[in-house]
Image (tube, rainbow, N blue to C red; front, top):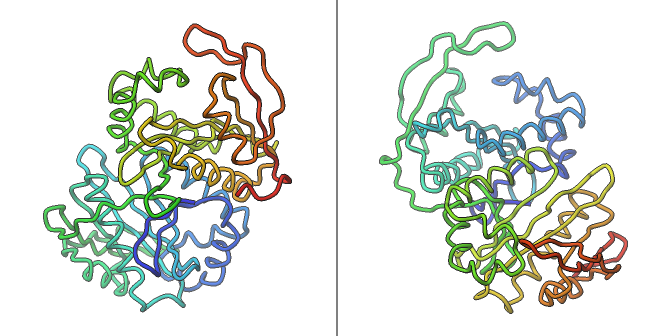
Length: 365
């Protein structure tokens, strides 16, 4: 769902479970090509193995340890590139990449690397990056050189591959040596002005500023606002959101409009085995009435039905929350009834509307 846009031809897509077959097919077709320098391709003996790998990468992303992506070239999966945070305190990371043989020599790895270096330095604020490659892997070393990485040295017999030890050629780049100024994000574009982004640790300031600025209005229907009194609270909130993401039981997205954080749309939870999910949302007052949340909810519904394979998605709103109720009807939810005193906001219980939408209900547009 979430892409880091490189150029018109190339995007980096966070691993997700609904593209498993295509990713496995690429690995299978390039097993010999990949195997020259990496043994992990041997692990992918079935689509199930690749699914497990993608779930593992999802967990690493949630922990803030590895940002691993599929490289998309002209709509097709071409390979993978990843940023590993090797030392969060010292702000250091390592970049690794591979391409299917048919995609080599097109500049794809270089352009993808430029975007990921921008993300590492300018978005995450890392200070040093390294690229390590087996010394005989001249193609990989050449990518680092094109990116402006400098030779740091050799790690002697550092890599064990199929029973033999190889030297690592190490390249480095410091933040103040990098000329790139873009600060890209992983996002889903709703339109030319509005995007969804998975909440990440570096978004804590944006979340808190929005909540704190619009606290009086939001607290009417958003119960947790009263306990959200510092950036630390936002950091803790995002930590819990990332735990859900890593456990594959939910998804919390921030909404940005014209570059400004303005709200949130979330799967509070989902149960894939039961094919059910529960959605929620909030939007700061200055951004209401622009169709922003309608587009955001429709995008999340599409993700639930298409990517997760959900059958039923539910939504609960206080009966008095007329804006939220109107939105539910606008995007195609069916009103099922009222839970008497079913929602608690601070110390008051409110009647709650119960809405649902089914995959069989048709196009949510």
